[in-house]
Length: 146
DNA sequence: ATTCTGACA
DNA sequence: TGTCAGTA
Image (cartoon, rainbow, N blue to C red):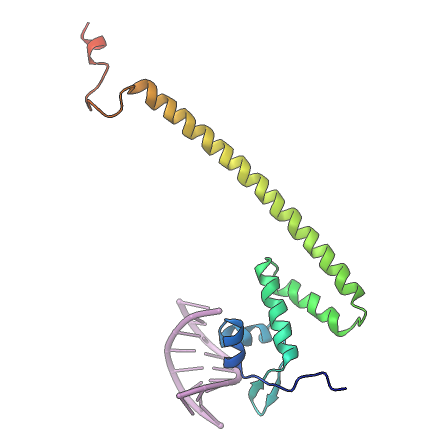
C-alpha cells in the first residue's frame, strides 16, 4: 500500500506549521540536515521533510548542535533497524544529562555562596542600624565625642 | 507577490 | 539566523 501521504508544502507553509522562519529551514538544508526535492528551483517539502524538521527542532530544544542532530538523522537512512541510531541517541542523551547536571551543581554552588554573602550583609546591616532607616546621620558620633 | 542565492551583521 | 539585494 502507499502509506506515504502525498501532501506537499512550500517553505512558507512548512515554516508556518512548525513556527519557524523559511530562512531557518533553508539554513538547515544548507547545513545538510534536510534535502527537499525541487520543482525547478523552488523547494517542495514532503511529510518526510516535515518529520525531519520536527526532529531537528526537538534536538535543538534539548540542546544538541545541528551537527549532532545531523549525525543522528543520517543513521536513519542507513541502518534500517535503527540500532546504531538508538545507540548514538543513548550516548548523546547521557552525555547531555551529565553536562546539565554538572552545570546544575555549579549553579547550586554559586547560589549558596550568594546566599551566604547576602546573609552576612544583612547581619552587618542589622548590627549597624538596629532601628531601620530612622536617623541617617552617623550613629558613632557620641563615641567619638569623648 | 514570492522564492532563491549570496553577502553581511 | 535576520535582513537586504538582485533575479526569475
